[in-house]
Image 1 (cartoon, each protein chain N blue to C red):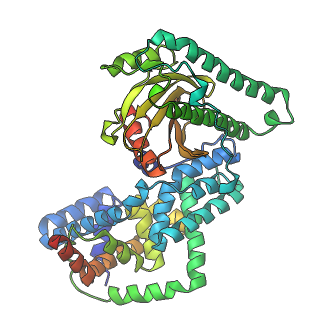
Image 2: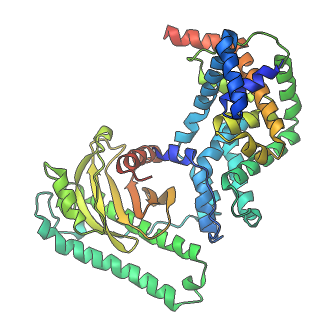
Image 3: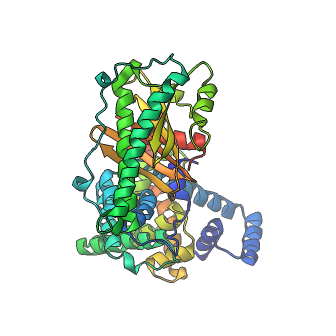
Length: 290
Length: 195
């Protein structure tokens, strides 16, 4: 049977009593050990209930729910448009030990290629009022998202297919800060390096890429654990509003991307979404990016 | 703060001048999905049914997004949609009566409330929540699990604040009694100690 004292104690625990009632209850608690025990039991059971459902918050959100939230059906998610980069297409693979300056022309040409693509997209949007530019802004934003995610998946494939011969503009040295300083000189904002060693991921180096039409850093991580790696993390600047972490797929590549305070992030790999989610959590924590 | 904590922690509002296009609306919806899933998991007691419920809520929200009032809490609006769909499902299955009977029987006990063991198996806690009547379960999930104020929870369920307070208190007391009375709880603890 519910006693009136029970609901008062519960309201007190929940911070739902006014100041005068709080004083009354605290005086009662001071004088009555049974009431104190009951309060402790109530607090403990509340914590247990929260814990019992806490694990749901750490699960990846199923793709079908993300699709439903976007008003899509899972089958309607755009198909992959991964750039056809192949290892054999780059006979002059730069080794990790090559110089930074050697990497600049390659990066610049890639940058120009992709920037050209972005510009073309924007021009078409402006020139065709009945087409893209005639749609609502959200539709354009979605199209732009698709473009940069296509590119992010392509950059990943480039790095993954190249293996040890991956194009690295700024190779990791004994002091990763040096690599980060160099790549930061070429992007609008300073780039910080998340330490993913607890996941068994080693930082190989950074590349200059394009995200949302701006220069961005692609951090390349590798691991012997084929269940996780390799992985790339793109950090770019963005003028778009913040967006919560969102999962996307491009063929066999998974992407978890989000925007926070003027920066765009995309964690890209072929690992399952559970790992991707966990690592993204770690990245967001370390970079204060959420 | 982790992504999950971020998603869990802050109330989500639609800004007044936001563009009501599907993408922007979807962003807001995605941000609140983990909390909706947790709420639905508590309501249904089933991972699959919970996600079905959340999916149905997303679809309904998108279809009725023009009904959302700017300046009000988006998360509360979504909680209400989830709760409404779930109540419809419960009524259609006549589960409400069964749950109420179980809970009232347990509420009849005058056993003193003892301290709940910290090592209580969480599965047992979820089962105990699942045995609560739907109204009480909803109040418990909104206030104790999701951290809404009594007023906010009352707005979600569309009942007076006093009703939420009463349902919540009954839920909290019933929960403790169930956990204390459950032989499974004792066995879970014993098993944990044996391991």
